[in-house]
Image (cartoon, rainbow over all chains, first blue to last red; front, side, top):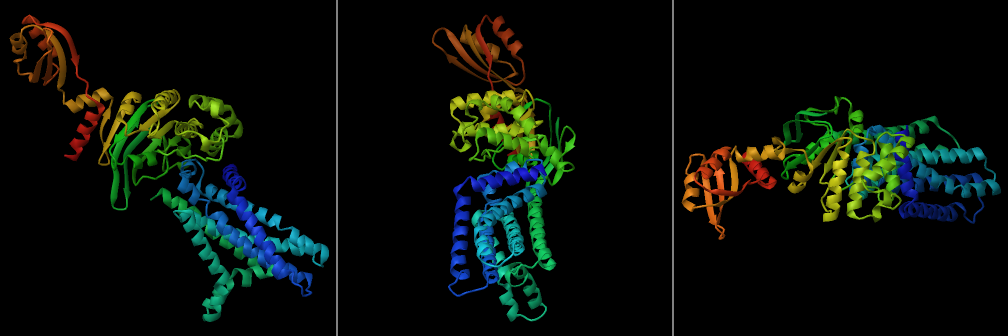
Length: 241
Length: 310
């Protein structure tokens, strides 16, 4: 556990001690706030629950975009700067290294989520939504963000450079976001499968509405687990090349 | 004790090393020589625990690389040619982080830090940012991370490349100091450096160890038992040449130094120096100076690798 926290701590500090981390955070918060103001807070009177739903829809999207930029450097940067050898020649296992990297990304995602709190706090103060609805929405953002971070961790573990890692992550994330459209033009059983894996249309929807679906929790946890396992196996494979 | 037996590694169909076997004793400084493509980098990566070999065994104090990967890596310190550094950290933070990465507790690292910074001569820059240091200091930071956890074997790949003459002298001292606590394997293209620093040399060519021993042993092998001498003599040319007329003398060259002395270069098929001296003395030749020609490591190395190529 110490090894995991050691890797996570250094990576997290490298985000918050560099302009890169703050630039991503500032841009993500700016876009989230802008969209919230533009799409959720319209001049038409709306129920506060609808405004909160829109907020989580937008924040979920920004969180996934954030995951692409945060994770692209996890392994690829270490490889480019030659510091990967410090991790690979240490007694840490591949599982510890991958989990450390993943946790640092997740901590950054949590920081982003915490900094968006002022928006649902405004809805809570001026509307009629419960604290539980907000907590459930954030649980969804973190679960979906976790899946995005895991995808990025794997992409960064296999890519030669950061750009390629970012592109691979973006392609996979876009697939999970857009596959519900593909499902509409396909026949069974492919349409059912693609509908099931759709991040927003199927799995994130209940969280937006303040409901926890076990199916969705298991889905995001499974995606996270699967990609972390792939990342771990990719590192192991490098030793046997 | 480092024990490598039958080490082999293939990248697909390409054989990088094959049948590599050697042992390194405790606190020995061993030089690793080889031309590009000889399999040197692959061997170093295996010894650093970065790559699992296709064949053979590698162990440090009986801890096997494949069977106990993490425990093996905990016993190794590795400095690649380009030192791996987190440039945003201070030297102290970097060494501390690396120590913890190698499994030390925070308290253990804090206790060890002054010694490591002292050995690597980094104490006076301990609180400076790594990225702002000169190349020489960055190399030392690389060594500091490699030794902080008191490894049994330290593998240094080109530790003096890019250093200025003063830094080279300091780095030699750093490497010698390392050998007080652990075994050191130094890989370098600079043969003079290997000659200056190492107790023993392993020569790698075509993916195999083609020779190993001290520099003197390798020189003897490269000469094939022959001895080359340079003598400064006083006496008649005929007397000098008369003594050289022997089956053991395979070649000679005589030059008049102009002050009544002769400089003679002699090649002997075996170590028959005493017999030659006795013949000169019997012929009334005065011997002012007699030295054995040293074979440069470059010559030895090229000779050995040429043998393999042939």
